[in-house]
Image (tube, rainbow, N blue to C red; front, side, top):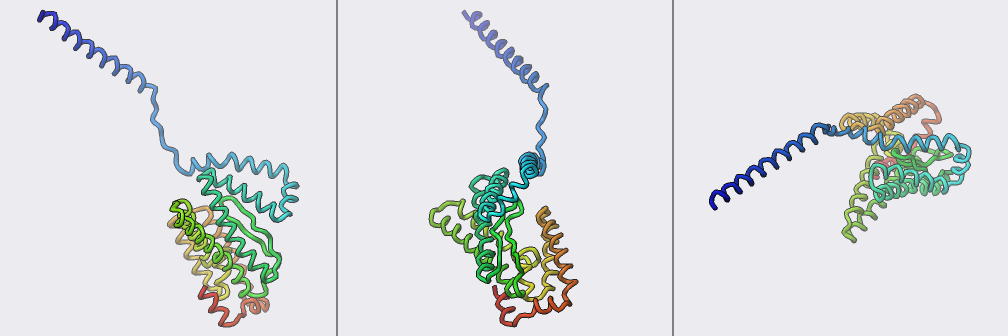
Length: 273
């Protein structure tokens, strides 16, 4: 009886050993055809996601450019369409909810410019969204002086910050992190726009103080670009440098002197804001 049990134990040990050997051989055979996954750089992943829709939109624009220009003549249709395109573009990188919230914040900011421009009687376009660049409005007539230009410029960040405060209040009332996060995004966007360099709002506002402030903004933008390189910062730097050079060249003209001549109280008001 003991011999029989001994044989059973030996058979069990042999079976376990053969099972381990078979499992190891199977694992080795699986690993022979395995190639390690190399993580793709972040910018390549983003580029891979973006180039197809951008190319598609570009082809559509080229094919139907005449129709696009006709549609965009209707102010709010152009705003709605460009907003939808921006939402779709932002959703490629982030969530749909974030994309919608970002476009809403940009719209509120731009409407601040529109409301102040219309209050001054200036012909102004409706907001137009540009994916990954933000949004803009165009004035068909320049303000009479730098004081009026500063008011139009500052209206955007002021109204935009109020819009961000609404997001923050909703987040606090509902205890939803999404609204709080969007509020901070709005605060950052409006604060960034106050950098004292054209074409940003801060650059147009500080012109009421002294055009030399543009040099401060230019230096700050260079530092920011070194710390956190970004194509948008490069674009702002190029446009800002060109605008700075253009205004500096014409600073001695009679029109420029009249444009920049405002009262001390008006300069103080801009400085306080």
